[in-house]
Length: 374
Image (cartoon, rainbow, N blue to C red; front, side):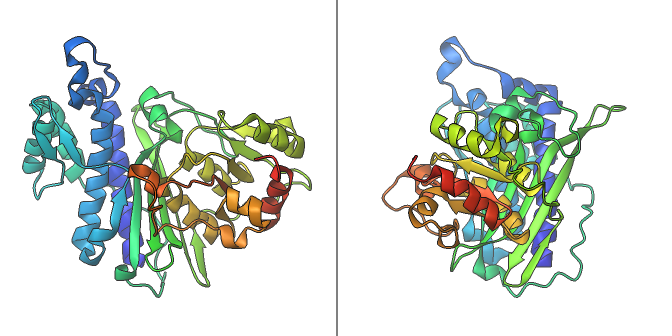
């Protein structure tokens, strides 16, 4: 498992590098932000370049993990389909090839012959990242790769990624929106039970070097399996009594905002973009809980950060189940079974909403005022 964790940290950094390259290299950035008009409006490749960046990252992770752990290859899933239609109406399946040149040729066929953009992307995909500093030595977890599956969210909070507002982050403070909300999320779960057992989060735009203007990322990881709970983040110190804080989406239902304003006070109710980032805020202790009443997140959004929260003694639960049962124990989200009555991405939605928390007492405090309101 330590080998798998090291590999996921490395591929997450590669993914972060692709995300940075798409913003830093002019030919790629122009595709990323370009809106099509007139006759070009129905041509897919430019409009969907963000989707292509997502797919490229997803397939790169799938490729690299599948090479090292072939027994996992059929259980590596992500948000995006890897089938594209180019401007000529040709269907192209995006994969990572054996060489940079072959990958560039494949991408050029998706990008209607834009060889400059295809070559820049292929170079980022095949480039090895700088070594990752993570203290994983001595980590022994009694699981085999054949027991595990993976959920990938290549770029969570894509609207923030494309908008690209820059923030200088400060320790201990939540920043509601900006490039730092865009995250690479890789979660590992047990195929038999759906429990999240390992998570890697990479924040590609954590710090901008004032000298060179280049972005540097930050990574977070956690392992939670039986009695083994290890996390790159330490458990935040408890805040003052009665000082519960919550983070929500700005589009959350008014009834939830009102109930939590009464519980936390207006100063401790915060808003932020991106499901992954909001759960990361709970992991970092910038908020005590994240509450979402809608079924608008998916397994790929929550699996990775859920594993980190479990390693810290917290979790992510289904809000609807919690409200019905009054307990969080049996409401923990799992990641192995689709909702067979649904179609497409909805098969993997967290339909009952969710609560991400670090401490069971905080979970109980949040559930109580929401009972009977939803």
